[in-house]
Image 1 (cartoon, rainbow, N blue to C red):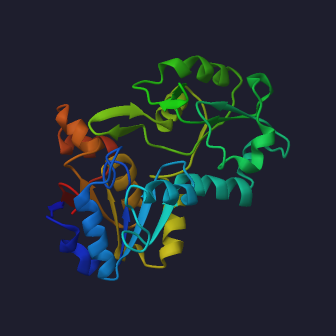
Image 2 (cartoon, rainbow, N blue to C red; image 1 turned 90 degrees about the horizontal axis):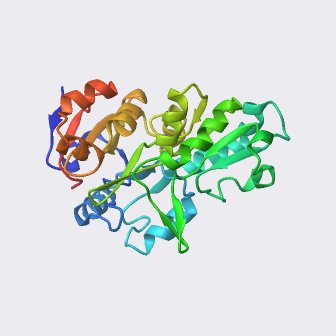
Amino acid sequence: MTKTINSLLDIAEQVDAFFIDMFGVLWDGKAFYPEALNICQQLIQKHKKIYVLTNTTMLKEDFEKNYRQFGLLPKVHYTDVVTSGDILKFELEQHALMDKITNSKHSLYYLIGLPADKILHSILKRQTDDISKASVVYLGAPQKVKDGQNITLKSIRSFIPELKKALQYQLPAICANPDYFAMIHQRKYVTQGSLAIWYEKHGGKVYWIGKPYRQIYDFALQMVQVGPRRCAVVGDTIRTDILGGKNAGMNTVLITGHGITHNRMAQGETLEQIAKQEKALPDFLLSILQ
């Protein structure tokens, strides 16, 4: 049964480690929510562990450098960071993921969207601009570059011709950000997961890295060294945060005052409808992270 709480402090006695989503929970796309930083600092002072658990393809060191300038401070607001980009880099370099997918150490990949160079550093020389020579597709950010700036988009329409070509060649795809959408304030834009779900629905094979898939939770639990029942996942999306957290055996807290679920409810869906569609019900509801 889902319970409404007023603050993470309400469940702090039963939780040793919080895995908190970034976009729509801590960060609105341009700035941090002040209440969110405040509660993280309070929990750190109470000797709780705070892990930022995010589907960004940005690597940890870049994430920390980028967001420190906006006021997110290690050891003050969080204990550590786990990104889906880190997980993919680990899988590529330590488990030879691309070699396993293609059954070859010399296979080439074709990029759709914008790259994350540091993730792909170990296999950059294996990129091809000729899709007919590729053995796998890497799904980058579905964005365009204009005047040197990355421009977010409302749909993946402009990428569908490339996706159809990949389907024709029966290429498996790698997606390191399973989110379908992200929010900047109240504006929604597509992310890598929208490319991946289109590809999968049209018959393509997709290798998913990140929430809600188990490897990112297993990685996080190994870092924290706390049992899952003493952990809580906090996020704004039932499909990734809540479903993934529940599958990993953790407590789950859904943020409803802003972010993806808030946007869906503002469009007329009920929480019950969303939960039924995504096959997961949160343990706790919290309007904003505080």
